[in-house]
Image 1: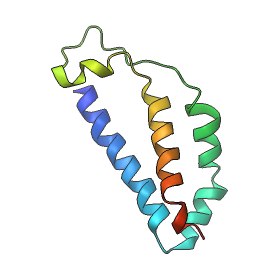
Image 2: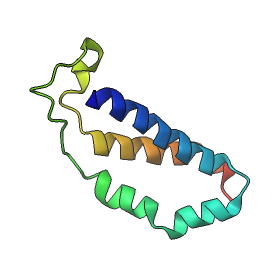
Image 3: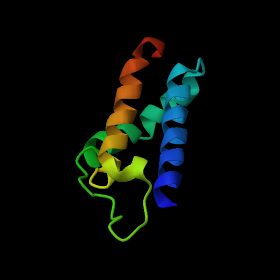
Length: 91
């Protein structure tokens, strides 16, 4: 199902960002900064108010709360928050 897949992939992406932030490998952190990933997250995705279009899908009860959510915006905020929470590991 789309939502189940999205939730799992979202968790993988957030865990990857957290790993990069916690890593002692500064080359990875430098690459993250040089790739302008954060600029894309802040500049584009936080401003994205696209909604899930699941009105014709059979969804589980636990996902009902997300039927009017903004997935890219919420994920961008989560990524930004993860990076802020890991700032003690910054080079």
